[in-house]
Length: 639
Image (cartoon, rainbow, N blue to C red; front, side):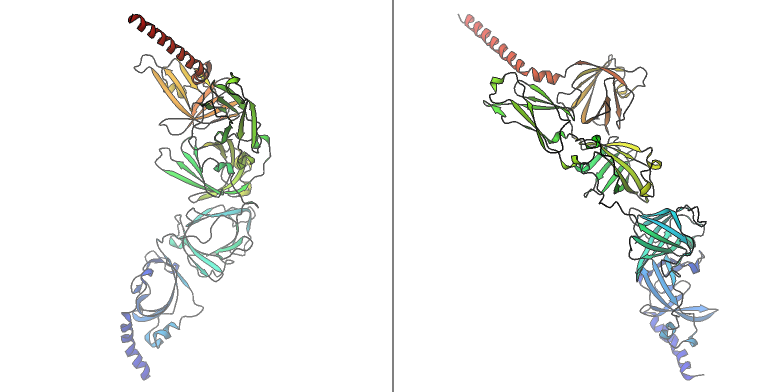
């Protein structure tokens, strides 16, 4: 036997023992791993300080190379592993055979026995935490089996990532001319990603229970690092390894992913959505919309029935559908908060002249001016888009008291948002958790602080989201911006009678046993009051004070959004010449009449205003009479 070999066999155990103390694996590698070659659940791979299950104990290392001592058929052997940490959750390695001491001359010589074209094994960490998916959605894609199979081109499939971008959903569509295609959905959790050259790799863990266990749960994906004309190619491994997946054109399935882009012009929500507030509250009280800065996205928050939890939907403006330009769309909506009265003479002879604004409707506004309480009604429906000044006759009883004053000017400032259509149909990309797609929504401006929103069913293709199949029966809801009060319409006092053919309505629940319900409204007040007579009870009168928030007229129906103190949400008061209804939640057209009502007189405030001069005159006269009689009695008494 060669004397050098004898010396080596004698020295090797001592050399390896000396290196053993310094040989250990990095702490970040520690944990439990899955490797497809050890798919038996009883053969889990563990990486500890000095050992790797099934591989042995570390006795030497240099850089990425580790020599591990093991046993083969009862005899001690050594193998070299060249280990690469691709991600916190993924280790890959190549290895030599487990060789006896006589088969290699040194540790580095043993590591040189690793074949250059040897298999690159993949170890995936079990129970790994999620990481960001490198390929963000949404994408439309086509796919083919095995890379050489017939591609499924029509209909296109859909891919998107979840809101936190740690999960990816592949919605496969079946093509009638491709036998291997099927309509299924795969939900993948991304647990690792890394870049190699011009390709990006990532490992996905299937979120569904799979009958093949871990072997069917893990897959390796590879895709082009960069897009070319909005297209990126992707491939997926046939088993739970990255071996045999050198490029996106190879794999069990290959994909052509097309990024979904919006319309040619930048898609923005209407400016009027942000004119009053960034947040719109649902009339029902359970939902609110927040418009994000930039006009490109919004968030819808929905409260649960018990208001103990909530869900969020995130929407992005995808494209605006071209619509017909009609008069209804472009009629300016009166913003009462932007009205200013131009009055050259606010005072005369040291006396201030009071002014009050009574809002009957967005196109019917009454102004009270001057000492005598003259009422001037102005119809603003014909105001143009540009800033205009409308001069109106000034009506007054005593022209001599205010010389040189015979005109009143009203100015309406129209913001840029009034130049936009008031009815807009938009395709939006919507995402809630891991559910996503495209919905068609129609935004209709009903007033400066009120809108309705109609949304169709979700589609996976933005091009068909507004077709009848998805938008034939849209969900409807109303939203109000801010909680500011407006002057209530319905100037006057009214008495109500319940329609006998109708079920008991809201007022009957609040005014049980009442024989008569009266309403007082208008005259500039921001509240309207219902009064119920309840005979036989200690408190025989019940009052319900509603605050008015928005008002509009459509199809000869007037709608008033009101709120009740200590109640969540809003109520809708709908009235015509034939009757009235009062319900909680959204306003609806053609709602059955609940009450018949009749006018019993003008509003008290208006009477007080128009007769204020006479009241002051009457009070002054009484004062003079009392003074005269007091003086007379004083004179007689002292005679």
